[in-house]
Length: 300
Length: 128
Image (cartoon, rainbow over all chains, first blue to last red; front, top):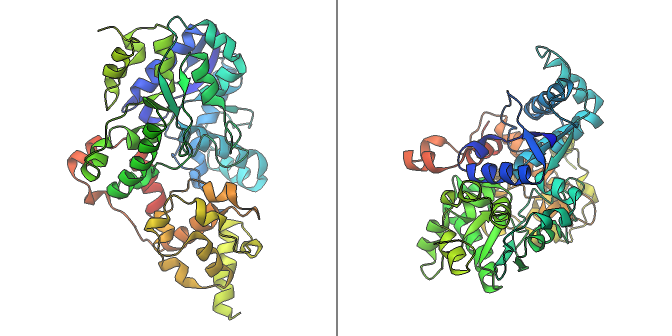
């Protein structure tokens, strides 16, 4: 077992528990133990873009310090940290870059963290779980598949923060293949669609419900029209806007048909045959299980 | 340029770290923006307003509906981080103790149902 530090982030413990459960189970199957730091805090969810802002970089950097502590204690094997949520990934990664490339802000961040036992050195590498899988090799992922997802047509939805800005994203900004490669390793049929990288409306979901429903409709309808049975995502906010919020989409577009949206790790857990605790489909709205039963991928 | 226009432009430049004069108004940012249907000025127009030092940019709806999805940024042929400019404009308003949104406007059901990630990011971007 390789022991890697794992930063969950707030929503992975609540609405996106299914994302976490399926990830931990699939990682274990692949020989990776995800080690969660004892004390972690919210990453802030969004990277602060103003040049004079120091305060909002403390939260991500404090989490990276926790990873260095884990590493110093010999509890993990590398100086990397694995994230699942696309927003956590982006915030930790960009905060780390500010720290390492802007000596003025680095000093200020450190000065503001004087109560910590040690100072963050800047050594942690921030990864997304998909990057860990790619590094491991898709063949290795394929070897763990006991139930290939034959006949399941899946549209990979990237959204924004997995791919943007350029240089931060985990794959080519314009022509990403990482989710496609993962789905192919699982034996699913990949359905490309035009809105795979279109924003879901993000945090505007809180106060602009109808506008976000419009965006979700366009994305979901495009995926459906392209022949997809379901969508996969790697972000709890995308999942919420495209999944549970289909109730709002239906209010505006009564003819719209439900389409399941699941985390990519849930399909991995299904293909790996890890059982219902690992697939954790009970947490998804709309429920993907009727579709998966129809496809013969889930028992009655 | 009038002194007040220059002052505004300089402040946005300082806060965003971006040189808006690089923009030649090709409109690529606006064409890829997912929120234009809700905007009063297109993103490219906001950049033009900053070029001219027009403080009216702060009164636009545009800066508040931007989702910071960075689509404009990866499309800009001049390498302007447009999301940084939008953030600078929001900050200039928020720093006067202005809140664009309030959790008081949400029903208890909405508060229960919304994931933390939505609420935290919404508050971070749109409140003082």
